Image (tube, rainbow, N blue to C red):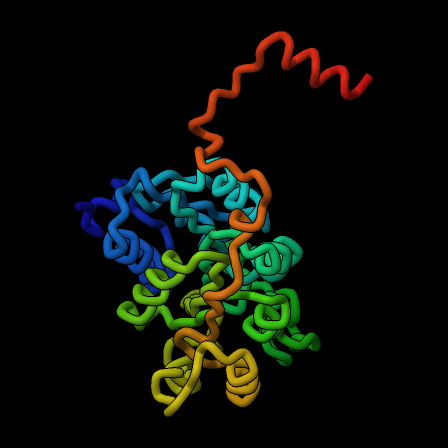
Length: 288
């Protein structure tokens, strides 16, 4: 049986020292081992940005996609080979700006993929510009007078879009983050896990200390019910979205693959895709 060390490779991450993404990488590796995966059971698909490099730092199948497009690729991989555990990953700019349309539709489609977003409220790779998660008044190179746009409330958005698994964590809490990724992998449907992953180089506001002072653990809220969407939404609004833990889960709704009529039990990746001459001619005839 694989251990988390089996999900390590020889590529050394070039993230800034102290970046929260190191913990996210470690949590993915630990979660994969804990649920009983082998490296060739896992595919990690990432987008562009500092966090997009993560697909190359894990010993598994990896695909470094283009900006905002990790989810279409990840969904294609899952549809072609449902035997794979597929994790999509990226930053808040990747998933909630250029890729927001894909995020919304992946949520409502409920395909069996786990999406991990490393949320640092800034564009780090391009040297510090405002992201969709930056607060009003946030000063960066692109908003020197302070941002006038409201930050996107992504957890509330996910609930509204019909998400069946919504969770949030903090990169310093490796135990909780690992457990949430395990739960996301085991969930039969789309799992969104937003991770507060501070940028130590360009974001001097949303720091580790800031999050420690402002985050509320759902496990500390007596009687919190993650199966109740109304409670989840109310709790998010009361805490300005700054909560960690399993926010909401719906185990009753079927996944995308379960709803498709005629979806083969045999993965497409293992099917015989050769066409006979008669089959080819029949297909061409449909367009004549």
